[in-house]
Image (cartoon, rainbow, N blue to C red; front, side):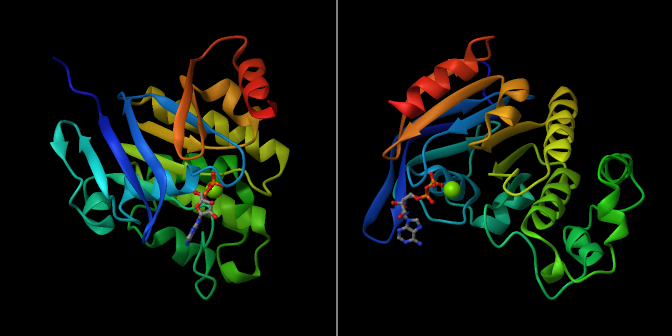
Length: 231
Ligand SMILES: Nc1ncnc2c1ncn2[C@@H]1O[C@H](COP(=O)(O)OP(=O)(O)O)[C@@H](O)[C@H]1O
Ligand SMILES: [Mg+2]
């Protein structure tokens, strides 16, 4: 049987004794962009942290290309090419934009960094500025560029468009699609349906820490999600 790129079985976890994510089972294939929708506080960020190792799991398993990574810490999972773009604390405020981008050693004279600079020229203009001086949206953009340039097998993006200007949101979507076509997979937790709609191969809806619905990409995707989130 072919193995999925990421295979998660009966995953639970949270903060100390508080279980937030409950019994989540999911699979992500190579080149898939799965969007994770859900109201505030339902567990999207917690789920991504369990997948990247930022939080320990209490039950279940996570496999990457068939090998179990459940016991690997966050650093080890990053070495195995699970990339995590956080919702908050996206940049190191005391470092310049360039140094923030260079933290993973993947930023520089390569096609993906050039593509990102071409899409977001403001990034290059801000290279020498301390990241702490940027607006929230600019920080998100720096964090997005760093995550994309890392070129993970699977990239977890947590609310990447928060505070980002609309024209840049569309470009983020274009870049995610290009990267997916090149074989990279994504899980994108996002409230902004304008980003989700054109990029999603599938959309999962999470509520009270459980995956309650899964929708394939379709012309009625937005409608289905809105209905689910409003009820
Ligand atoms: N550090 C924490 N300690 C305890 N509970 C937390 C912590 N962070 C988040 N939570 C709780 O976990 C639940 C899910 O939060 P979160 O995963 O951030 O949701 P979402 O990303 O969907 O908005 C919420 O009830 C939130 O209050
Ligand atoms: Mg969140």
